[in-house]
Image (cartoon, rainbow over all chains, first blue to last red; front, side, top):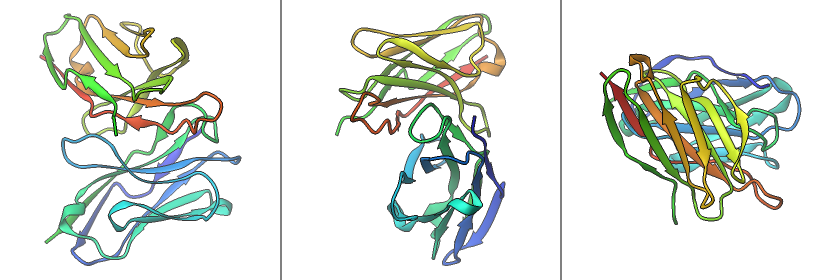
Length: 115
Length: 115
């Protein structure tokens, strides 16, 4: 079974600062990786996903993530954050590798952007 | 495009009461997953169904049961509710059959409050 670790519990940035949120997973085989965003009181929204191919994945709202297989990492980045990016961000991976099984989520990183 | 529908969106119950949450997957999706997200927590997998059969089981209490019906909608039945059951309950659906990506699409969630 998989596990996912997100390194930062709470990140506080000023508007226009750059963002990088760390995510590491444990499974060594084929993986599908996801980043979800959850605005306060809202449901999970998919930001981006990696299934295969180009390890640099672009998502919605200017977010991107890079899959580095040798480091078991899938870090989320955004060059310039906005106040509206204030939310909680979850990294996730399929439990049994590839596309199989339920999603295993990291503990989440709460992002607060100061105007 | 049609999305995952969950009902009710909000539910308030007393301790020891029962609750039934419903999930209507995206048309043609054959798999349903249930997740529980406690306050300030990451989503935890409860149970999943594929083609109306239980597929996998996570940290679902014995007081809870679930099923998937012939029209692929699913219901999560919760009995002897406890204060700790207060959470956001997400349903996700996917198309797992050959040719499907098995990518999970999340519903808006049901917020259950147990008083």
